[in-house]
Image 1: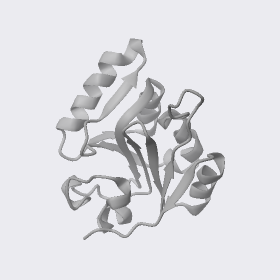
Image 2: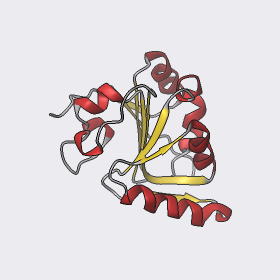
Image 3: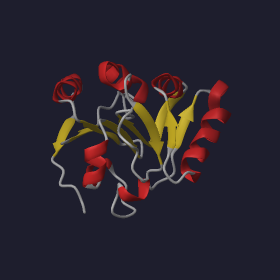
Length: 166
């Protein structure tokens, strides 16, 4: 199951970003290997001015990679802290002992949305967060307790039952 989270603030923009989601999964997320993967759309972050060039370069690195860019938990926290808004971005955490599958095997076509992934994605990934066009976030969490904790903290959450593509 995937959560679609779309809580907005009074200005009509999302009221949260990755830096607000990560602390909610720190008990699980800190032990995972993280990957920022190309999402089919250009990875795009609106960063703080002091980090804007570094954030822009990182987004270009992700998009030019075939299987994404690997990050430690600390590096992911630092990236999230340097970003004001993630427009497009897919962040996945896998257990260190699980081999990272080829990116091209995780999605059946160019629709690289977390809720449309292949069974190899759901078999490999413990946590996935995906920003979709500044409109909402998708969250896939294997751990039911963590999933329910996130679900309870947001006002506008839709549960999407997924059927893995072949």
